[in-house]
Each structure stands twice: as structure tokens, then as C-alpha cells.
Length: 404
Image (tube, rainbow, N blue to C red; front, top):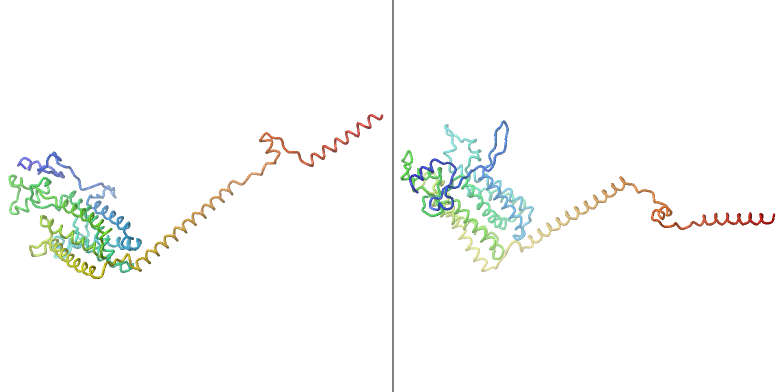
């Protein structure tokens, strides 16, 4: 990257460049973090950001996926949906709370108090994935207890859904031009006006202005992409593993936190915008990620040893799960039967209503019907008798006339 290219980057806004792979986007990639705007009062508008849209879309796909896999984990779909929805609420609250706690100086007033309005301005950004996972687990566990949903198989299902949400949600960082890493010379390294500025002052905090010859190295790792691909690979692996090789309830969730923790520990090492434990050089996410990996490995080993000794026991094969699913099936059949009955009654009422609106016309006489069809009508017995009487009278009159 030349000094002239640096000046070009500094003169543009919202354009992503790939200096070591310029054949892909020779003039850069123009982006906008706003997907569309909704008209509001007094001529104002509310911007809908790609970041929020992608997170919401990822959540939706996670819910759809979870609803389709409930029976394979021995769970009732209606109860699981309640747990998942409560987990989504807890995830958002937890993600915000986690970020605020470890960025507390930014949310303090001049008087030393907490700026509540700033804390609640979630649209300004500031969500931490580990806080989201913690919040989702707390809220989900509470509702699972209330709805009598077994926690361990529910966690297995949640782990798969979280990977879907994280895979898509990370692309919101791309549109925000954030969550990038340190300097790199790899072909997929990226830079932009905001990335170059942030990265430059990360490496040269003592400078008050950018020196172009130093800025030629400010090309960053796309850490959002690394994490998105890592989550996608984890989801594909655990999806197929859960179908054929799952050995105990909670195994998929432990594999999830181990897989994600291992990838996040490495990726967080590259990040330049990490949250730190106050007054320490330790990154919060790296510490949490490393702890998750150790926790998962230890529990996986313990459970695998137990399985080797006692055999595989899954909740979906238990009498309780079978009874719950049978009750759910019976309830669904009853609802379907009632729906069919209601539809049948409504159709009968419709037919009666149509009949009352269009009363039947009087039946045509057989003669009229016959005439309308062009066929002679059959003679009536009374008509034949009348004709016979007339003939007899005529004969008698003829006889009298001849005697005179």
C-alpha cells in the first residue's frame, strides 16, 4: 500500500479496500451500515441497521432450527419455544450488561454516577457475545424450570442455535467496520478510513496526526470473518454429530463452548478493540474463552468415562420423555380433530344458508316436463274415461238420427 493510496483512503468514507487483493474490488467496496429508514414523527426517521437486522435474522433462524429438532432431543416443541424466546430476551440484556460493566468509565457522568440514558441507548452499539450467552442461559434456565423442561437436552439444542446466531450476527461488524484485528499482509486483509485511523492510533498512540508513510501498513485481519466461519464449521460438525453420535445429555453444549472458546481465544488475541479486566493487561474474552475450554474438556472426559462404565443414557429414551411426547401428540390430534369438526359444522351451516337464500322452485308437472323435452305425455286415466263417455253419447245420437 503506497502513500498515495493512504491519502485516497483518508479522503473516502464507508468504502472497504483490500490492498493485497485489489483485483477483487479494484475501487473498493462501498458499504452502508443502514439497511433502510422508517419514517417517523415530525419529518424524522428511524434507521434500521444491518447489525441489528443480522442479529435478529440469526435469532429467527436459530428458533426455526430449534423448533425442528426438539423431538430428536426428547423435548416438547411448545415448551421449548417458551424457553428459547425467554433466552433471546435474556441474551440481549446480558450482552448489553456485560459490555457496560467492562466499559464502565464510558457510562459514568461527570458527577460520578451512572448515565442510565447512555446505558439504555443500545442502538448506539455495545453488545458482548459472552454476556449474551450468560444472559440467555440464566433466563432460559428459569423458564425451563417453570415449564418443566429438562435442562441438559435443552442446552444441547441451545448450543446449536447459538452457533447459527453468532455466525450471521458477526457480519454486522463488517458493516459497522469494527471487530477487526491487528496488522496483516494476508490477501484478505482489509482497511478503510475508520479502520486505518483506529489501527494507526493503536500502534502509534503518541501521534496526534497520521503520518502517511507509517499508515501504509494499516491493513487489518477481518476477525469478524474468522469468527463467522469458525461458528459455521462448528454448527455443521455438531449438527451431524448430534444426529448419530451424541452419547449423553449436555454433550453438544459442552462441545459448543469448547469449540467456540478455542476459536475465540485465538481470534481475541488478534483483536485491537478488546475489553480488558480493569487495571490488568488481561482481555476479558480471552480469559472467559480459556476457562470455557478447560471446563468443557474436564466435563467431557468425566462423562465419557461414565458412559464407558454405565452405557449410553439419553433423556429422549426415558419413560418421562416418551410420555411427554405422546401427550403432546394426543393434544395435537385432539386440536386437529376439533378443527376438522368446526370446519365441517361451518360448511353445513354455509350449505343451509345458501339453501335458504335460494328456495327450490315448484316441480314441473310430468306433462310440462315431457312437453319441454319434446316427448308426448302419457294419457291420464280420468282423461281416457271422459273421452269414452263422449264417444258413447255420439253413437247414441247417430242411431236415433237413422231411425227417423
